[in-house]
Length: 157
Length: 195
Image 1 (tube, rainbow over the protein chains, first blue to last red):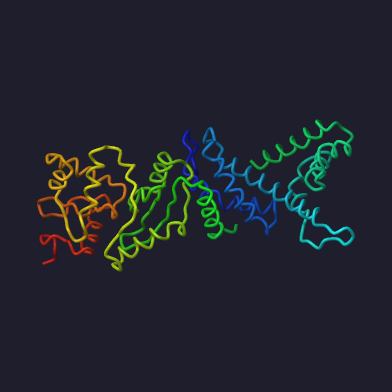
Image 2 (cartoon, chains in turn brown, orange):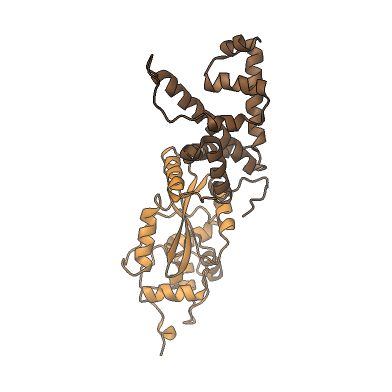
């Protein structure tokens, strides 16, 4: 069922019923089969929190794709943080963490941009740390990461 | 493409309700009257639609009235589902569900529907008599349109309103559903019984 864009927001569930299947495919692509459903569930709740405040009813499908993308990136960051903080000093933690999904997500970007994103989300460095590694100012590092995230979101829209 | 698991959607719905994000919840229920769309708002059942109505139009009206966060959940509406199923399948003689009549904005129609709620199972009332009870004996035509646009049929029993001619009269869901409901309640007029 196609959801028409009008000035009035359609009932949220008509979007879920129209696009839910493809959003799950998208979530699995970003977060892996194992975490796809968690990402989608998180994304739908985030979408419900924001939906009544949307200022127009256009491009709702693209908007939902962006919400799923954000949820996938956040899950990735959370899991990375968990691994870092739980890591014993010598012995490597046994975990099922897989960078494949993240690398796949950032694959379309240029290598310098990918490097900035890895430093931010995989190595979990702050902008000072990223700046030091890239040899630029913290403001420039922040700019580079946020531009890259925006590009990623738009590429899934 | 693997379809979306029902359990995922139910989890989203449950979390949304817990967080107070849902403006309305709906469910689809198969009954002897066909498929019903049942919508619950913050203070009760706000809408029941027979399958003769377009679902997207019904839900769009709910979104305009209560807000756009309209979600589906069989589990959250389990009490209403159970009550309606039991009543329509003849396992229960009472149907008591909280009702929200805010979709009926015209004041007289609202009074008519409120009055109608006190017509018990097994009894019927004429359009004229209901007009009198609602405070305007000459308004039987307006009573007719109040019933025709009853947003919560079955629970607000507009099927119990009959023309004084002894015929079945009109019904929002079609006369056949009216007959089924009246037969279920043992209130089919003598003139309409099979001879």
